[in-house]
Length: 158
Image (cartoon, rainbow, N blue to C red; front, side, top):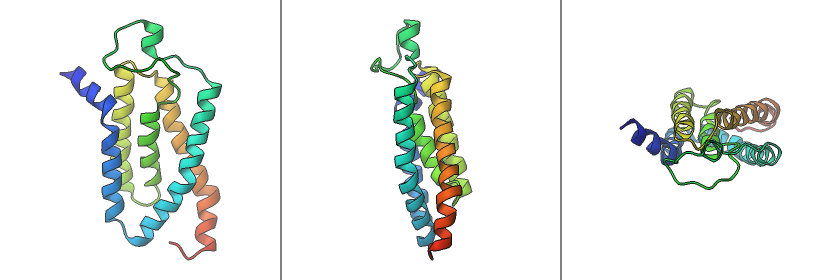
């Protein structure tokens, strides 16, 4: 039973981040929606570029490749760093961090469950999911600190 929960978490739980993010986004005011969209437009390409660079610079074979065990979920034997599923969930949680704390907290809980599930089923090492979370947090912090704060000052948005 526990295995089934983690298999579900590893394969499908990231979709809940998308759904929760969309529902929370739709419940925000127009100004908050603009802020999130602009914040996401700066964050997404940067987070993705850092993830791609990380994948090229750090080779981390997946646990089932190095451990030679039967995987609960079929998957390619490619580089495990960073975890794309965790990166997406953490990215969605991070973009809500400056606008809606409750939504962000809920989304971080989903991201954590996805990360734990991906490690539990043997798709990723802990470093893969921690790297994904770190990329999301650092990019969101940097974009908010160095771009968004100046953008809000220069424009009438927010």
